[in-house]
Length: 271
Image (cartoon, rainbow, N blue to C red; front, side, top):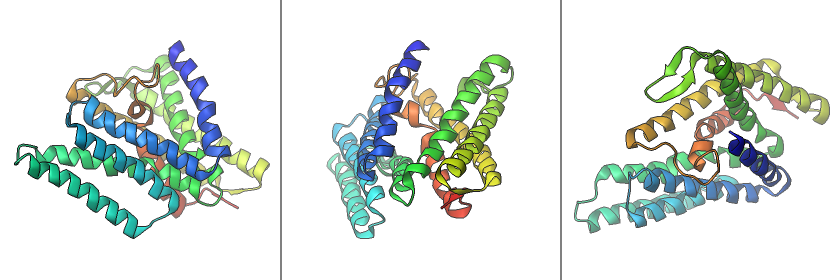
């Protein structure tokens, strides 16, 4: 537990400096690297794809997805990138004379395109107007949901939520996570209103907290299910006390794109 706290205390300020103080392209590079490492963890560390070239193609594609998220929806560039990536995957299939399973190619597609596109919603939020403020919303939702669930589950948890997938998660913990996310969003809205003169909608903030917390649980359980299927505890050991980047950003890969959609449909803050 101490290692987990020390790692968070060391890395969180660095993360905030990059996403808040530096240009948006720095956020894109950071999460491009995170997405690339995540692709490696999903494919290689799990044993799902023990094929060095396929893993390399997927990691590069994941990094490029973050850059496209930063520089806007360039359809020709994205199309060319996906065509080249697909050609590389199918080229390996043909070179193997059919020995390479099609399922492995689909896992590469998930690791190289699908998960990075979802995670780099953070980059798209940061690259837009008032991005320094909007990018913090998914962090508030995911981290306070996780914190609320942890402490509530430790204190009151009795009813297992999904014992075969995540034995430590409880229904009471989920309720605490929802409460933590809602309180966190309301307080963040208050800060934006009083300190930065934003117009905020507190009802929308409550909706963000409720849906965002449930999305965080969904993302966490989804990635935990993969770990259970392949028989591993963590996706990696890059972050002391936390595991790999997918262990830390599993819920964020769902919360971030959800926040992006909610900001389009019911913007909680406007200037």
